View 1 (tube, helix red, strand yellow):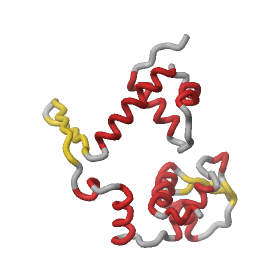
View 2 (cartoon, rainbow, N blue to C red):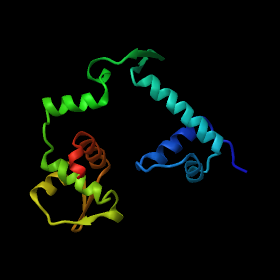
View 3 (cartoon, rainbow, N blue to C red):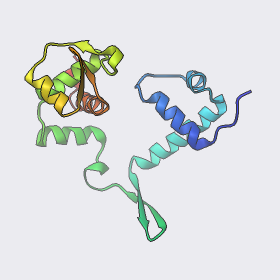
View 4 (tube, rainbow, N blue to C red):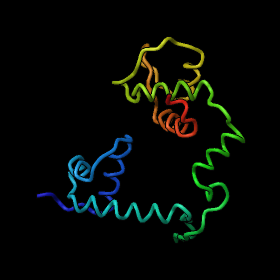
Length: 166
């Protein structure tokens, strides 16, 4: 028999399981997290409702004088625009093409170099050294892999520049 897990803990467990970007069924998530299938269903019902609300609104949480003030407000500025249009604006206004850094980070991501055990051997270069210094890439001997920040940057670059994945 499975022990009861509170909704917060269950949600955090599920979110951690989903971080790798793989696709799962509810049954598989229940298996991987060892959570009851109905708990997994409840978590996704909650996440879906939150996502729907937060597409057009944001929650402001302010800590003032021993009190927490919470307010849901409509998104404003660029965040109120659909994500695809945000990306187009960013590309046209600031970064029309990916740079060599983006290409290298995406290369490591596509080769699953996201942990020391999956590090790949590469010839040292000025660009690699710069990304190691910036803590986007971790070097172990002659092998390299993405840091947590490098992984986030690589995923962002892939999202902004889909052509990097071809």
